[in-house]
Image (cartoon, rainbow, N blue to C red; front, side, top):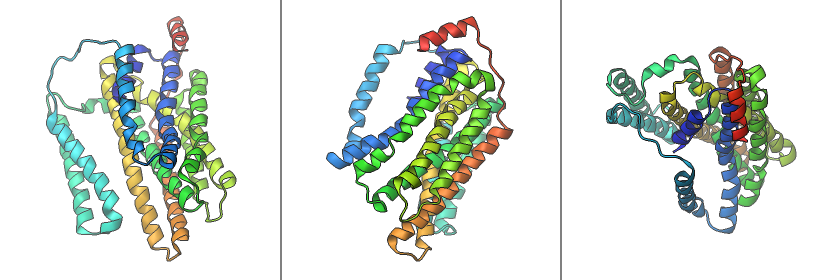
Length: 363
């Protein structure tokens, strides 16, 4: 659903100011949804039941279907074939699942155990098989030729560490707020409320300056702010307060995500042909989802290992584990910055009369 929706944005607005504005709205909704879910989830858990966090997807799905039927025009397929690369789909799905499963269970199995090494080796074999299949299939699931577009390859490489750091951070920080600071679920949710607000403001402000400076500088700046916020969290203690220990980090990370998400969306879709927008959108969405899964697996594993080896009391051990995990998450942001600096190519865009008219339609 997500790549299909993004494809609609890309095919509706041409490259330039109009598309940047539309992607700003898209980025604010897409990235802010995860943070807003923490707030809503806290309310459900506190006043109803934690199971409502899953049940609420039913009416949300119904609303999504209603919106699609009402606002999205139907188009006939322009595909020249109807072949599905089922072998490629099986290989990449199995490979990615094995990777996440191995990283998740490694703290329990042991990083050098046969089970951990075997699962990770199996993942490598399956993913290698996927690449081999894509290079030979008549109608590949993911044509490797799209990686010849430099920004597409770079943007996907950036999306994975960015979401790895952020989604893993949400999980660990939620536990810290409730276990160490003794926040109730709804209070922990409200503590994250500044995140979606700041993110939405930044994501909708950045497009106004994108024409003059390009998206590369915003992508680099966003990675720096994200890294600084995670470094701030790596300094928390058992006695840290929300105003000095948590809120400044949330502000930095939200601003960084607001800059990064819109910039990486523009980078991942710039120079992509109209018939490849679905592919580019699907790849970016996969990088985002896999980044979140890998980030949660890696950071929770780091936190668990550091806590178990600290020899401290349970609360102090939890904090020690979180600090180590937040430090690792800041390294993810550093990786994103390096890719943005040395791989992404940004050229300033020019505004035409046509794109100016499209901007009016966006607003």
